[in-house]
Length: 151
Image 1 (cartoon, rainbow, N blue to C red):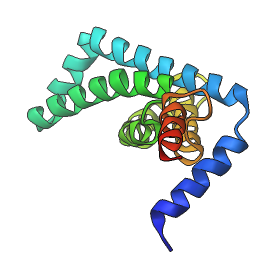
Image 2 (tube, one colour):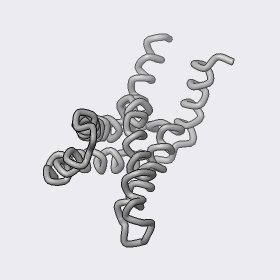
Image 3 (cartoon, rainbow, N blue to C red):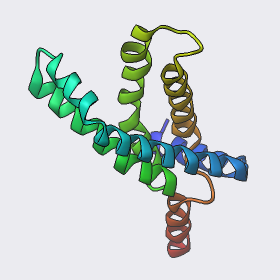
């Protein structure tokens, strides 16, 4: 089967079955990730702690910059609905690491809100990876303009 053709079919189906409230959820998720990126940059003590506890300082330094950049830029792109699936793909390693490696050290208790926040964010990212950005997005507008030019 042709992967490109199948992706277009999935996009058309998702656009047709995509309620408006899901677009608001996507925008809220993008804004949340953008704010988390700002918070990550502002919390220099936690960032310094991550670097000091690491055996590989350059790797930790690179990961810290990746997380900040991915949340800031990816959050904005997800909120606008611009290359949403690619933006989500850049977020997934961060959230997988948060859910499976960082937050479980603190326990799975209801008081560990960071774990539950990370888990819900991860599930929402997976949802938007599958269903795309919806009708009220830059992706949709660009697809529609391309279709208009083709006809």
